[in-house]
Amino acid sequence: MTDNFPQTLPASWYCGAAQFAREEKAIFAQNWSVLARADQLSKPGNYVAGQIARRPVFVIRGEDGTLRGFHNVCRHRAGPLFDPGAGRCNLSYGVRCRYHGWTFDANGALLKAPGFETNGGFRPEDHGLFPVRVEEWNGLLFGCLDAEAPALLSWLGDIPAIAEEFPKASEMRYYREVVAEGEANWKAYGDNSVEGYHLPFVHSQLNQATLKIELEPHENGKFVGFRIAYGPWGNHPPSRGYWIYKFPCLLLHFSEYDFNLEQIYPLSPRKIRLVHWFWRPDDTTPQGDYDEFTEGWQKTMAEDMEICAAVQQNLEVGAYERGVLSPEKEPGTIFFQKLLGEALADAAG
Ligand code: FES
Ligand SMILES: [Fe+2]
Image (cartoon, rainbow, N blue to C red):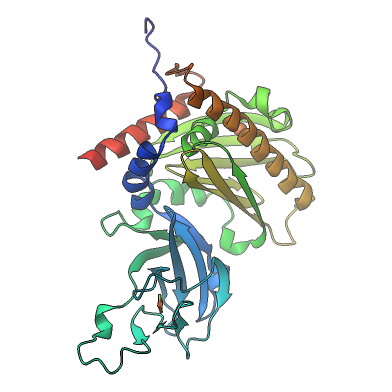
């Protein structure tokens, strides 16, 4: 290289099982991820089964009102307790494994293990469910696999203070979910989500609606923030907002009227799932036509996925090894790649 511009990550980091396994261990398994909405867990017995770093987990509200998280894996022969999704179980029967019917309480303690009652040596307390940390913020339930990770609020850093400027999700109405899958490495999607350089070329509609974007990398909470002002977008009224890409895999979009978030699930080195949840204001707030608004977001997501999948193919075929980043146009991507390098270096110790 003859210039002084920062280099991109090597193409090989976007490909292959070895790098993905390294990231799964050093990054996804050590950070918090959104597991559920508080409204899904309002009553004792309500549960949501999902995944963190591809490990099936669930969160459940006990009779005492406390939310607890567990690996969704039975201690007998690794059967699942719940199918993915939300529901309510009758806690007077307990949480029953789907494979051979071992039953646990909402604290994860083993209650019944048919066939093991008569064996004097069997100790139920040695066979309880493996716990997963859960904490709540802004009407959202987060889970974390790592006992050593910081508490949720310190992980969020400056985000709660920024969120104070906008209506709370817990005061809005949950509106809908949009799920999409794409053929790209999660970092290709991350690199793209933290810069506005591509807007005029990839998102003509969003670009027209966007009046102003100021990008702010935050060390406290490890996220890229975009202070944004936009004019009418579909039937959505003009608004100011704050968009966040929280390392590693969470996007939060606050505005004066509504809130939405997107969680990225890295499924393989070249596949991601995006789960996008939308909240709308209560009926007293001007809100435009929300279907059109969420379709606008879907279009934006599809445009991003399409360009990221094309980039992914090019990264895989070997003609390109590393490129350059513009500190003027791509400070968010430079920051994202720095966070990634630090997370891997920390884990390597
Ligand atoms: S695997 Fe759960 S009861 Fe057998
Ligand atoms: Fe985009």
